[in-house]
Length: 138
Ligand SMILES: [Fe+2]
Image (cartoon, rainbow, N blue to C red; front, side):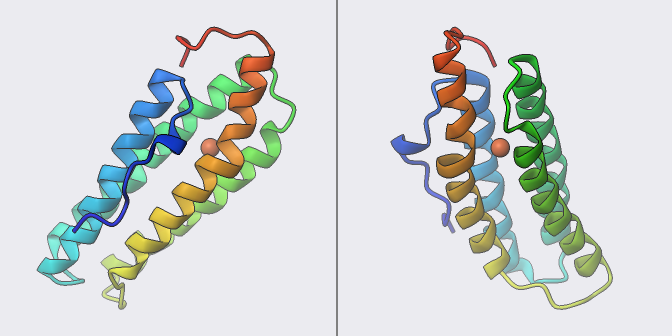
C-alpha cells in the first residue's frame, strides 16, 4: 500500500536531504504495508523501528546542516523534530506493549512529513539559497 507519494514540490534541491526524504516516504509506505500482517506483528514492529531509527538519522543530518549555516530558526525546527520523534517512539512502546496501533498512523506520518517538508524544511532551504550555499551540500 503506497500512501506516501513523492511529489516534485517536495524537492529541496539538496541531494542528501532529498534522498533521505524519499527514503522516509518509503519507510512510511512499508509501515502501512506491514499492517497487513496484523497490528501486533513482527513486521509492524520492524517497520516502526526502522522509521524511528531513520527519522532520527535524518533529523540529525538536517539539524547539523542548519547549525553549520547558522539558520536562525534552528530551535523552532528542532522542536518540531523532537515532537515527531516522540510520536514515533510512543508508538513503538505502545505496539510492543500490545496496545492497539492502527494503520492510520502511517497516514498521520505521511501527512506530517508532507506538511513538514513544505512548511518547515523549505524555510531553511530558502535560507540556504539566500546565503549563496551551493546545492551540492547536504
Ligand atoms: Fe525538518
